[in-house]
Image (tube, rainbow over all chains, first blue to last red; front, side, top):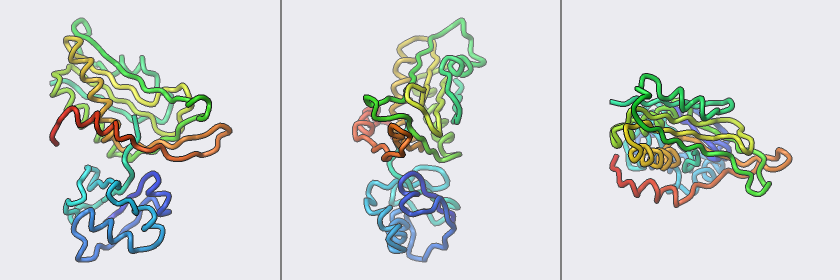
Length: 83
Length: 156
């Protein structure tokens, strides 16, 4: 699965995108965030306010309880500030 | 069924030209156009520019989704949503939305609807560029933006 990060999530993790193999117990977007937080201080810092992190599966907004296993691309980013 | 016209631009946004561009195929002899243009503020000289990041592909898709909902909900002839990315100096437009309808009420309502949804759903993020060109903090999302979106009480 391809993961993409934007804005300060991207900066804190230090990557714009990466390919990952999901462990079997990662099912939802929320599980993915929780798993990533255990991968290092940079991830833990980027995702510490996990309730506020937004997720998109294949470029569609999804709530944290959405099953993302079938997605080819999942993006994590802060609340949007366009307009 | 009305038309939706969306674009993400990394160059100067000229509102009048885009509003004209966004109404192709419409009978301009019937109807009303309402438009909104959001401009980069200086915050009393504190800010020199805003640097915008977006999610290519999803930004256009979300703008189209929002525009299509507006066309349907307000029975519009056409909708335009154009958003800047990259560095936008103070005084330059960041976003332009326009709604073309038979009568003005629908056009006015649609413009507010479009902006409320673009703010909360289109994947763009702003960061401040301070006086002297120093990169400042990311702009924080406002709770009031979510409240504005929710007042439309739209599901899905």
